[in-house]
Length: 181
Image (spheres, rainbow, N blue to C red):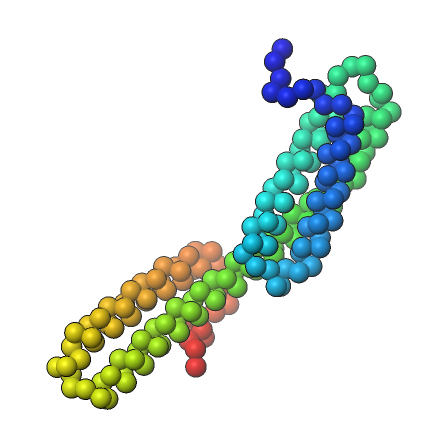
């Protein structure tokens, strides 16, 4: 019978369990810094959580694939370790999901704010230009500024549309609340 990888030994499974303990500890530390999370942190946390689930699944499956003869007592000990670490893995995955949702919500709010600042600055530029020149002189420049404002609003609506589907921002904020003063 062909296997994609060799049959695991008890030592292989123990190494996986040790890796899970290490990952849970690393993720716990990373999640403590969640309010200051960067895009890189969020990406790393996402990958690490995925790996954690994979390692846990591998351990559970590998305990059934250990070749005979096997020390049943050691194997039962490994199974108990897998059972013991599972609640910590579930907890860290739940916390990761919440931190990721919070991070995405804050990221979307900051994108919306940047877009609104851009609209406001373009409107100010157009208003300033109106004070100093006649409407005829301003027509080409005014059309460019108006087009830039429309494009910015299209981008803004695209971003905001995502949040309306996703929920949190739409419930907590109105676009008018985000307009820079």
